[in-house]
Image (cartoon, rainbow, N blue to C red):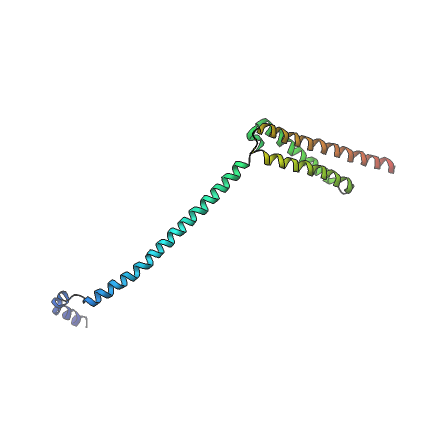
Length: 175
C-alpha cells in the first residue's frame, strides 16, 4: 500500500507543485492571523499593567522600610558611651523587675503601685524615643533617655529595699 502511495505522489508530482493553495485558503489564513494578533495586544497590555503594579508595590515597600529605618535611631548611634550605659541599665532593670515580680504574690497592692510608677517612666521613655529622630538636639534627648533609665533603676532598687524591709518587719513581728 505504501508503494501505491509513493507511486501516486511520483506520478502527480508536477500537479502538486504547480497548483498552490487557493485564494480562499489564503483569505482564511489571513483572517485567522488577524484574529490571533488582537489577543496578543491585550496580553501585552495586561503584562505591562502587571509589571507596573509590581513596580509600584515594590517601590512602596522600599520607601516604607527606609522611612521606618530612618525613624528608628538607637542611642548608640548618637553617642556610643550613652548606648553602653543604656544597655547596662536595661539589663539591670530587667533583673530588678524579675526580682520585684517574685515578691508580687506576697504584696500585690504594693507591687501594683510600684509597677504604675515604672509604667509612667516607660511611657516617658517611649515619648523621648519618638522625639529622637526629629529633634534638632539629639544629644540632649539621648541624655534624657539615659537619665530616664537610670531613674527606673534607682526606683526599682528603692522598691526592692522597701519590700525587703516589709518582709523583715513581718518576720520580726511574727517572732
